Length: 237
Image (tube, rainbow, N blue to C red; front, side, top):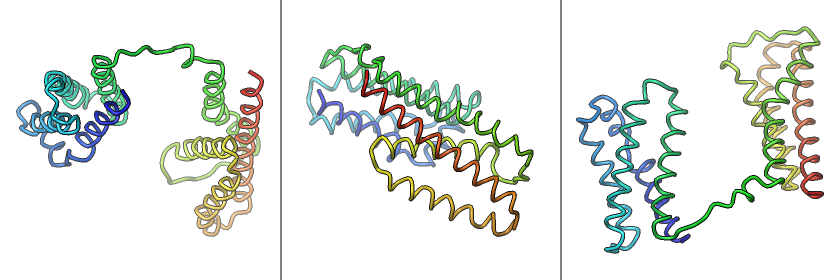
């Protein structure tokens, strides 16, 4: 089963991300169903599946059905949903639907069962809880703490960039602690300091320096605490 999964995933990744040029995407977006590239893109997927599975006769019909499903999904996401939702959400929906169609293709040849007991195991629930705490919960708590200092930053940067940067850095710290790669935290802290150095130097504001330092220590500290608690909990469950 796994060799077939790898082959189909390679075909999908090559077809969707490597062999689909910006010219093809722009033509599909402008000409919709009349775009020849919409159907060329579908044929590329079909050809890749046939080639990677070794030109086996028993795969031809399934490959046609999978390619047709790919076409229907692309019509739905690229032509119907494209102007109704954000591009990132569109991409998530598009790839999720493709994943489902590929899963059905694999199931036809290798019937499998999904063990929801493993998916929703206590350890995975603890991991999910940790991720939620690292991202949304900690963001709110840190925001409320730094608000106590009554200091506002006049930022001309991206909207909510600091929030998402904080989420990402805490996820990285969590990963480093869980994998016992503590050196990574030092590298992350050094990298953040380098990028922040220009802002602090140009502003020459002690309060800004202290504000950023407090936020950074709270962010890194909370991530380390959550990671250690995660490791403790999964070892006793």
